[in-house]
Image (tube, rainbow, N blue to C red; front, side):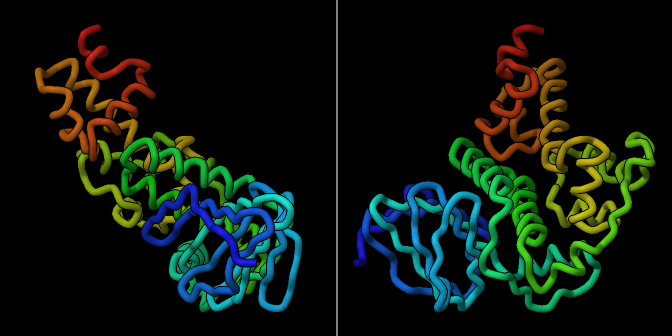
Amino acid sequence: MMSQITKPLSLKNVNSAITIYQIEAGGSDELHQHDSFFQISMLLQGNPLVQCEQQFRKLAGRQRLVASPGCQHRHFSEAEAMRLLLFFISPSLLESVYADKMEAVSGPIEFVPWSEDETDGFQRIAETVCTQMITQQVEKLALEQLEWELATLLLTVQEGSHTQKWRGKHLAPYSAIPASIHPVLKRVTDFIQDDVTVDCSLDTLAGVAGISKFHLIRLFREQIGRTPAQYVTDQRVTRAAWLLRNSKLAVTVIAFEVGFGSVSTFERAFRKKYSVSPLDYRNSM
């Protein structure tokens, strides 16, 4: 029986989207397909039956369904309402992440539809995206990284045509070189520190580093303990604190002067680092 379908939350990014999808008890959605996206279905509430092509399975616990573009699928709720967490990922993003890590073109990527292991990583990414996009304006670099992490996670945990080569790729650790003198890291951090307002897209930073975006994110995590986006935000807040101490510029002016897209985003980032508002920080000086 077709029934009311609601989407309590739906967020769209450039190459991905996240939706909370709810169907009332005893209902279902239509048999459908997505021609331009992979869909990942994971359980939040209920005990649904899921159809993928001609196969029917219960979706429970840590299970997930990955429906490839063109795959016919639908969801059936039973005695109670069903709530799912859905991710949509473009094939071009997955192919870009694969090529970036492997330094080779993947060709079309195909996944096995069912899996029963990792869901925590997907939920963490969903919580991060939802929190940031609902509560504040999100910087472009942070959204790029979250999409990159989502695609990397799916390629890592979901079996498919890429798996043997992807998991067989050896990644030498960067930890042998101290962060303070690592030549690649120093090029990027110097670039950021020279002008904190500069375009800090992943493409730009990877170009400065001379390495792939996949390895750039990994290098920052291993050597600095944070992502490039977190590092950029920290440098912008540090520069703002200097201006608050040494200039008479208004807080609003400083927010844009150091590269933030909105005053609210700046104030949240500043309070997270210094535990006070920018104005209270200035007054305490």
